[in-house]
Amino acid sequence: MLNKKIFLGNDTAYMTTYILDNTVDDQKKRPMIVVFPGGGYEFCAPREGEPIACEFNSMGCNAVVVNYTVNARYPQALIDASNAIVYVREHAKEWNTDPDKIIVCGFSAGAHLAGSIGIMGKKEEVIKQNNVLNKVNGMILCYPVISSGQFAHRGSFNAIGATNEVLLKKTSLELQVDENTPPAFIWHTFEDTCVPVENSMLLALAMRKNNIPFELHIYPEGEHGLSLASDVTGIVSTHVQSWMPLAKEWLNSIIG
Image (cartoon, rainbow, N blue to C red; front, side, top):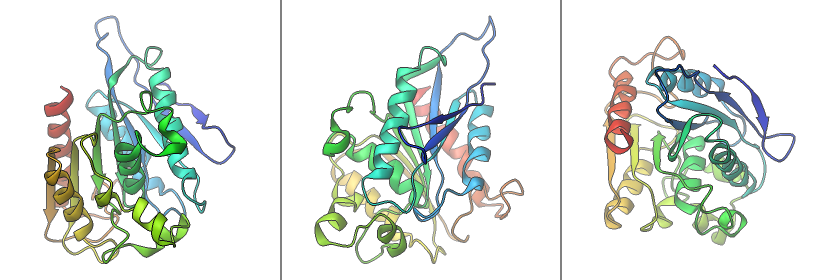
């Protein structure tokens, strides 16, 4: 396996690679999962990074974990995300990666970032010039921060300086969904008191309105930040553990 730290245009943002070795009998190009840990845009949670990459490695996917710039005004983290996907696509041949099977996977505020690059990659001016190379083919969004409105996780928006009406609207993802939005797998818990479940519901409604396919799972129990919901990541919720097998099935359905 290739494990390497790659900086993304500045000295604060970098990604760590989890690129599987290939054998003579295994030359099929692999999907790539680009993982964005959560942390309220104030830090990047390790428990939502490497353990997630390793899970996707186990199903034959390559992965990278992006440690994006935190406590920085919008759109710095979005630029980091764009740079990560551009780098992956530019090195797809070297890493035996299929450039048409690049999936983002984010958690909480990291899911807001994953959703931002997936939804706004073609229209946000600071990254629009890379809208072919930074294209996202699918999104896995785990207890995502989505809306800056009534159900906002206010700390995430404050951390990126989204405090005025214009920027709050731009960063409220349910308002940005359009026909270019990639398909999504979304999950949340009803009991989440940090990022209300309405965030996922608002995104799903916006995608339905625009005829974009999605899969949505809402678990009745479970706190925020469950990650894999197993001993591996520290908070155990047996029922919620099913999200990863379900996400793998969803991946197979859209990318094979």
